[in-house]
Amino acid sequence: QMMKFAWDNYKQYALGKNELRPLSKNGHIGNMFGGLRGATVIDALDTLYIMELEEEFQEAKEWVEKSFDLNVNGEASLFEVNIRYIGGLLATYYLTGEEVFKSKALELGEKLLPAFNTPTGIPRGVINLGSGMSWSWGWASAGSSILAEFGTLHLEFLHLSELSGNPVFAEKAITPPLSLPQVMNIRRVLNRVEKPQGLYPNFLSPVTGSWVQHHVSIGGLGDSFYEYLIKSWLMSDKKDSEAKKMYDDALEAIEKHLVKKSAGGLTYIAEWRGGILDHKMGHLACFSGGMIALGAEHAAEERRQRHMELAAEITSTCHESYARSDTKLGPEAFRFDAGSEAMATRLSERYYILRPEVVESYMYLWRLTHDPKYRHWGWEVVKALEKHCRVEAGFSGIRDVYTTTPTHDNMQQSFFLAETLKYLYLLFCEDDVLSLEDWVFNTEAHPLPINHTDFK
Ligand code: DMJ
Image (cartoon, rainbow, N blue to C red):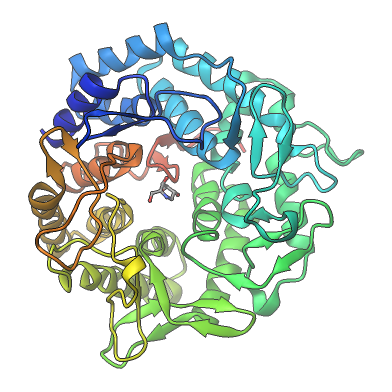
C-alpha cells in the first residue's frame, strides 16, 4: 500500500522526471544522471514486480519502452547511473526475462565505458553520456576518484559482460598485455597500493593510483566498496576468492582500528582521519550491520560468531539512533562524543531523507537469525514513516528527526521505492522471496542472480 501510494503520486505528478516533489506536486530532475530521466521509474520497477503490483509495473514498463531516452548529453555520476539505472534494468530483466530491460542496460553500459580511460584504469566520477568525456568531482581532493564509487561497479559490470558476451565490458585491456575485466583492473590497483594499517582511504588518484587523502569511512565515500567485495564473492557462487580475501582483510582492519564501544555500551564504527578517530556514524554506515551478518554466515566458526555479534550490536546501535529521536526515525549522522550517544549533535545532521540502510540491516539480521525484534523494529519504522513522512501526495524526507512536528524537504527519493520499501517488504515476507541463497542485492537493492554455474 505504501509502495502503491508512492508510485501513484510519482506517476500522477512527476512521471518522466527523476523524483517526485510531494508537497509542490511536481517533478525534480537534478543533475546526477546526465540528462537521463525517470530515475524513480527505473528504481521502482523490480519493487513493483516483486510486490505483484501488476498494473503499476506495466505503467513503469511502458514508460521504459516508449519514453526512456538514452541519447542524452549531460554530466552524470558514473556511480549513480550504474547502481540505479544499470542495476534496476538488470534486475528487472532477470526477474521478468523481458528483452527491453536487457538491451537498455547494455546500451547504457556502453556509454559508461569511456570513464575508465585513465592512466590506471580507475574510472573518474563524472562522465558526459553524450561525448564520453570524463572528469573528477570538483569537490574531491586533487582530482581523485572515490572508493565507494569506483568500488561499486563490479556486480553490474560482470552481469553486463555475461549478458552481452561482449569483451568490451569484461576484457578491455586497460593495461596491455594484461587482459583483465575493467573492474578487475580496479582490484589490481587496490591490491598494489599500500594501505595504512590495512585500511582503505576514500580518495585515490586515477592518474597515479595512490591515495590522495587519508580519510577512512565505512559510511559515505567508502561504504559500498566493502559491500561489493563480499557480494562479488557470493555472486560468483563463492569462487571469487580474491574478493573474499580483500573483504576479510578489510574487515579485520576495521575491527582492529575503527570498531569502538561507547561509555553506554553501544558498539559503533568510527571514522578515521589520518590516524585520528572521529566518533561519528553516518546513517549510510548502518548498512554495515547487514553486510557483516551476510559475511559472517559464510565465515569459519570463530569468526562467524564474533561477526554475527558485531553485526547485531551495530544494528542495535543504529536502532538506538532511531529510538532516541522524537519521530522514531534516525538522523543523517550520530555521534559518540561530548556526552552524546547515538544522537546527532549538529543541527546540520538532524535530517532524514527516507534512507534505507537501517531497515536494510533489519532485513538481513531477520533473515539470518529470525529474532523477532528485527520485525518489531521494522514495524516501528513503518509507523514512523506513515506518521511523519507521508504527505498528501507521496512520502517526503524531514528536516529534523528530533521534533514531532518536522518540516518536510519536499523530496521523495527514488531509493525510497528501490530500497526502503523493498527491504521493509522483504522483512515481512517469507525467506524464499528473493532468497539470499540465489540473489545478491546491489547497493540500490536491485537483486542480481548468484551464478550457480561457471560464471566468474
Ligand atoms: C543509495 O543510493 C544507495 O544505497 C547508496 O549505496 C548509498 N546511498 C543511497 C541511499 O541512502
